[in-house]
Image 1 (cartoon, one colour):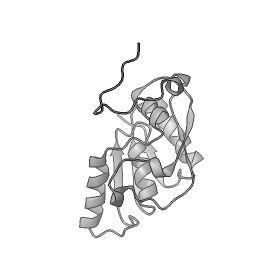
Image 2 (spheres, rainbow, N blue to C red):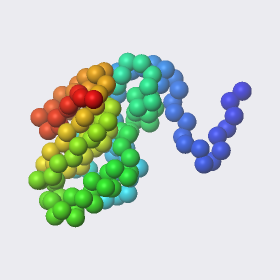
Image 3 (tube, one colour):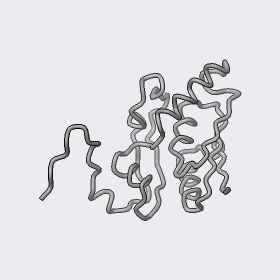
Image 4 (cartoon, rainbow, N blue to C red):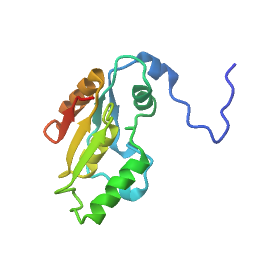
Length: 152
C-alpha cells in the first residue's frame, strides 16, 4: 500500500523514470532551479541535454526524476553576490567560478548559462562523472566555456 506524503514532504520522484536509468535527459531551462527570480533568470531558450550515469546514484536520480539541474541556492546566491560585489559585468566578464566536487556539473552548467562570459572550471575526482559532464558540455556547445578537471 502506498501512503500519501505529508504536505511538507518533497515531491515524489517519478519512480518508473528513475528505474529506467536513462543516460541522457532533456531539461527545460525554465525548470533549472527553484531560485529567486534574480538567480533563475536565464537568457536561453534551448533545451539542455544532460548526460547522466547509467546506474542509480543520487545526482542522476535527482535530475532524472525532477528534470532540474542540482545546484544549491546557497552556492548560486554566493556567486551572484560576489560578482556584484566585485563589480563584475552582469554577463560574468572577468569572473571565475570553480565548482569543486562538481559531480554531473549542476552548478557549473547553471553558472555557464546564467553568466555567459564567466570562466567556469568544474573539478571532480570521479571519472564516470567527469566523462558524463564532458558529454553534457559537448551536447550543449559548452565544451569551450567550461573546463573539466579530474583531480583528487
